[in-house]
Every structure is written in structure tokens, then in C-alpha cells.
Image 1 (tube, rainbow, N blue to C red):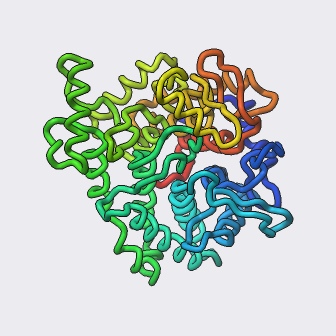
Image 2: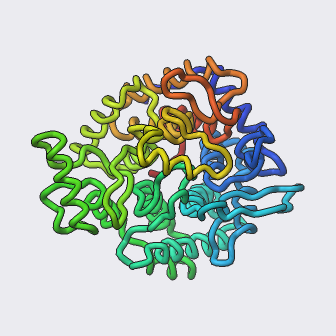
Amino acid sequence: MTETVGSKEVLNQALNLLEKSVAHGVFVASPQKVGNYHRLWARDGMICGLAALALKREDLVQAFGLSLKTLLDGRGPQGQIPSNVELVSEGSIGSVSLGTLAGRVDANTWFVIGAFHYLEAFPNSPLREDLYQACARIFSLLNAWEYNSRGLIYTPEGGTWADDYILGGYTFYDQVLRLWAEKLALQNQGFLSSPSGGDALHWIWPTEKRAEFLRLNFWPVPETKGQAYHPLAQEKYLQDQRKKSGSLERAQHFLQALKPSGYQPGFDTFAHSLALALGLATEDQKSSVFQVAQSTGHSLMMPAFWPTIAMDSPQGQELEQMASLAFKNRPDEYHNGGIWPMINGWWGIGLWEGGQKTWAQSLLTEMDQALMRSQSPSFPEYFQAQSFEAMGTGECTWGAAAYILLTQHMKGLSGLKL
């Protein structure tokens, strides 16, 4: 494979930030002491850990291991992984958050994904049995969070990484993370042969069964609407599609979420990135997703969610009420169409795995240009989608980690088990 890398300057910034973001031995969301960013966050820490494994840096991998242990120590009473943990001294937990306005479902699935990647690299880790037990407990929790034992996790609004965005119900993002977590569990022979793994197999579906179930329910088409989780919701969505297009009566991408009241039909870039990386989309679906991505009006880097929500719409008024501390979701900003380096690192991996390697290289070039324009501080939380002004908290570690993962993946060195 031809080695393809991004800007050495940006890569060095990413490496420096990853190093700088180890505090009390664990990865923090940002070295900047703003709000609660100077804490270990489950999903951020796991993405940083994956980057550490990709780099094969012993010091950073050690921070990954301690991050896993700290999250284990901070678990909730039902075994749920904390959203974030405050460290007051080396290995000492100050406070634990399981989520402010809502619990974080994806903290748990990202933990499983991180744990199995760590155990793939260190199968004899002293943490092994504790991680096996924690992962088995999480699979049981995910099954409980279906509530009706029908195969889809029900996420509370605000219960994902986009905690200030209108996204809840049976979210596609959370289902894809579960698919990845289950796939990793089924590939880990040590886990499967352990007592914990034996217990967890009650809750884990075969990978292709889960994948087919997700295609059926998040990509409505007329041929399968009678088999769907919510047939009336699919019927209504397909009718709406026909009215809009005049003829087209099928989805053009995976839909954001399903609720008892119907589908939330927007485009979730993070969810699509993971779905493409995991090979969930068929060839026809991949082609359609790429067409939709090209229609968003953005050259290469993708917004978090699309289309944006107008503030004078009913959804806009609801969005304003979602802010936990301060409102950030004006159109083209933050979750509401903002352009995140973290998400675009994963989007590049999705493009690469989806067969769009030239597109992925062009995306990386645009990321380099945007990140070089905003060198101080490096790796802003997100860019305003129209002006590309750097916004949010600076020095966001998971943005640097996703950039590292993309560059390493394009060289065949990421070590990601997809």
C-alpha cells in the first residue's frame, strides 16, 4: 500500500496535544482547564487510547490502561461507565458524572470498544478479568436499555456525545456502536471462553444478524416495510419521501433515529462514518450515502448533523431548551451543523473503508489546511460551517486522536479492528 500521510506540522501538533493531555496519568478531554474538559471522559479517552495503540507509544498506551482502570473504578451501581471522571491526584477520583441531564449510553459502548482493542494488544493484562466482567455487565445493560427486548437500544434525549442536540430514541449511532462492540466481543477468544463471556453471550447477536436488522430499520424501503420494527413509521416516512420527490420512495441514507412518533430523518455524520468503517452499508447504500454527502453544500469536511435546525422552527425552540449550561447550537455551529475535526477524522476512515480513498486523501488535505489556519490553540472543538472560524474549547484531545487514527489508518497502521 502506498504510504499516505497528512501534514507533518499538523501531525506533530496532534502528537504534542495527545502527550500534553495526559494528566494524573489519564487522558483528559483538553489540557485547557475550561468547564469540565480537564477530566477523563469515557468516549474521548477511548478514542485517545485507540490513537495511542496506533502509535505504539508505550507512555501513551500506559495512559490508556490507567484510563480504563479509572473508568472501572468510577462505575455506577448498575455497572454503567461514567460519562466523565474528575481526578484530583494520581489515581484518586474526585467526582464522577454519569450524565447531567441524561445518562450517556455511548460511554458504555465506547468503553467496550476501547477495552477489547486494549486486550487485543495486551491479552495478559492484569486488567483482563475486570475488563471482561465490566464488558459482560455492559452487554446486559444494553439489553435492559432496549426496555422491550426487541433489539434496539432506547437512548434518552441528550444521551449521546451530542448532549445538547435533539437526538434520542432508537438512535442509529448507538446501534452502530453496539454492533461494533458485539463484533469485537465475538472475535475475542479469551472473553468467549471466560465465565463473563459465557454470561454475555445471552445478550450478543451474531454480527450479520445485527447488521441486517439495522439496515432493515434505519434505511426504509417499500420492499421490507412490513418487516420493520415500526411499520407505520416506515409507511409514513416513505409517503413523505414520495411527496417530496414525486417518485422516489426510499431512504437515501441511514436515518438518525426512530421514535414511537416516527423517524428523525436527518444525516448523522458520526454514525455514517462508523457504519461505513464497519462495512454495514451495501454497495448501493454506500453510493447513495456518498451522493447525499456531496449534496450537503460542504466541499469535503462534513457537518456533525445535517440539515441544520433553524432557530425560528419548532425544533429550534426545542433545541434552545436542550442547553445544559449555555446555548451553543446556532445554525452551523456546535452540534447544529458545526464541523468537528474529531468527526471528520472518523469520516475519513469511513471513506477509506468505503472505497473512496482519493476522497479520503482530499478530506485529509482540507483538514490540514483548516487546522493550520487555527494553530493557536491547536485542534479546536469545531469550526463554524460557513466561515470556518475555530470555535468552542481549544486543544480538544479527541480531535487530535481522530486525526492520528485517520493518518495511521491510511498507512495501514491504525490497528483498528473493524
